[in-house]
Image (cartoon, rainbow, N blue to C red; front, side, top):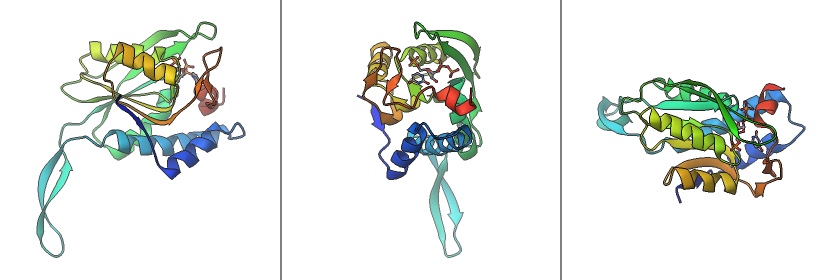
Length: 206
Ligand code: PRP
Ligand code: URA
């Protein structure tokens, strides 16, 4: 299965502090930036590069630079917004689209309330959302970006539940998922265990 779990001591350190319920929103936002930056680097490992002739202070050589085609990052609002800046900081030519989805507190079914996507124009799409719980939001978002022309979009999450991974695989087989942690299970209210609670609430202090 194309599931990539970030295996790095710094990732484990950051996720543990994100999980800690005493972590306040300001620190939570910084940690979100840091883990998303690691994930952004990991998830883009397959980006195309092109040869570039340069001269070092000592001799000429052929190096490699990113190919001119940029890519698209699509956060699932609202919590996914916290994962965008690392992508735009590292990759200056990235475009950003938005998909707004909100889970109903009783049914945990996601409702769509916003969508603004750039034309894909052959560019790879990365859908970013910190939490993959039932998978309902990710499945909807992946469907929306595919309807808009994205081919084989990648999903990037911070904490995932096995149920969500299975749901994405069921509806979008072969989707590459990058996550910083794969947790145990969902509870009766469809929250991830051990998880970190409601990501959006902790990110924005609501
Ligand atoms: C959270 C999270 C995901 C979704 C995951 O968003 O950011 O989008 O839940 O759950 P699922 O896999 O069961 O769909 P939420 O709906 O709470 O909205 P928010 O980002 O506005 O807080
Ligand atoms: N959304 C969250 O923010 N947290 C969960 O545990 C599940 C869905």
